Amino acid sequence: MSKNDDMEVLALAALLLIPKKAGLKNIVEELPKGNSNYSKRSISSIDKIVIHHSATNSGTPKAYANYHVNTRGWPGIGYHFVIQKDGSVFQTNYLDTVSYHTSGQNTRSIGICLTGNYDSQQPPALQLDALINLIRYLAKFLGRLDIHGHNDFSSKSCPGDHINVQTISNLAYAV
Ligand SMILES: [Zn+2]
Image 1 (spheres, rainbow, N blue to C red):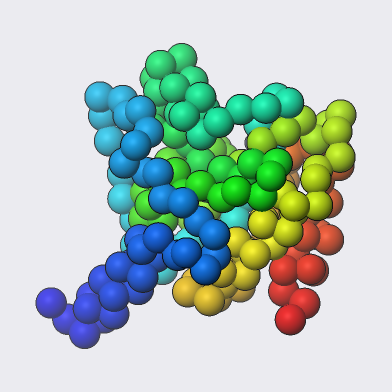
Image 2: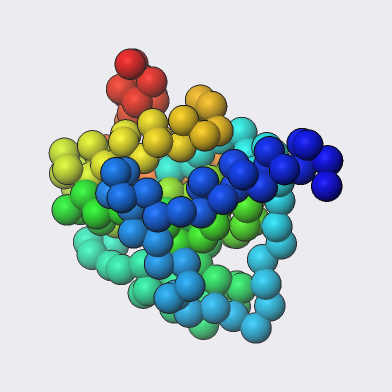
């Protein structure tokens, strides 16, 4: 193993821990999985975060995973993190997993899903605060990642008209 490989393993180990301070709950191993596996990547290839909404009023990581595995036929849930309206944050894929959430960007991005329909609702402050904290937390390990909405790469409205990605980025990186 080269020194660089060692550094990468150490960085990855840090990311795989359940970071109590950031309020994350790691449920990667508890979620439904398909018959195939997502491919893996070096975490140094990650250069952006893509924000999604569930486009539903409510939902759980397990429900999204079931939909992605059983209806879409994917290897697992598409998102790396799911944030609920009460501000609870679930890690749903390891960061070195190339899951499916944004066509053309999956190898380089982290997918974060906000539960809610933000075409028609305003996101709760608790949920936005949790998102900003998560972005800051990730920046400690990965540096400042560009923040995008799914609609930057797709004709979909996701993450909805009421999610202002530029404001979120400004707030997250203001300190
Ligand atoms: Zn989306």
